[in-house]
Length: 319
Image 1: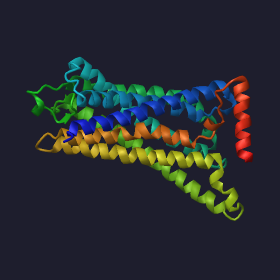
Image 2: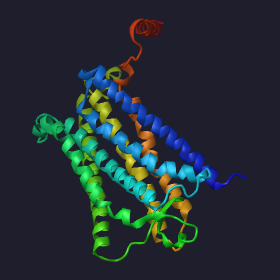
Image 3: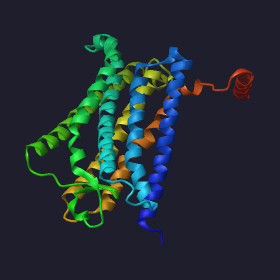
Image 4: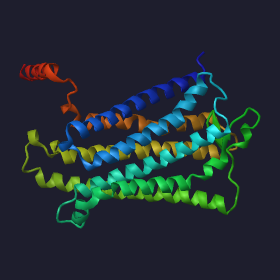
């Protein structure tokens, strides 16, 4: 009979393999666009690059330790290693929240009409992207610094001490003091603000798409639908990204809260939550690669081979 550990190990391995390869490929593609076709660069590419890096950090720091444990590599990390891994994981997860929210807000501003209140911001929005990333890094690093104190490697004789666990590391129960209250308040406020901004910008984009479809439906035929516009396609992709993020984020949170407030420690539930928490960083690059029309225009074959490739594609189209 196949053990649950082996099933979890295979699931995390496939998730990490798909996610790491997909995010790495997406990162390389954006670099190629920046150097091979700089005229096609978009300000949003910088946001997506940072999201890709956050995704890979999340997969490395949560998926890889689970895989190591499930395939028999026990007690690989000591307390210091667990503190570092857990801290990076929490920062990358928080950074993913911020970046997805920024992506949603940025696209909402970009597609706003030129006569709207966002017209003035639209021109200067791209200049503040790096400032936003610096702010995200500092705030997340400060909010989750208490994780360093609370995290430690799990030993067989102290599993009952923890309220948040994986197979590798755990977080001790929080004490009721001012530092703990500030830590919980900071985490809650952080996620609430960025989810609220995400919801408002997504609602704004949905309303704009609805109004746009009403305005052009009597102008464009089915063969020239407004869905073919790059701005509309990009907006739909980002809305889908945000929806996936919220879905997997809250499944992960519900599993974590269940473990935290249940009488018995149930590592399997937390492991399932961790798997759903890794679904967004694993699947989002596939969605972005499939929706970016610029990626299909890139040719990595130089010289004569490139011309043969072009002739073959033309012949295929004509056929």
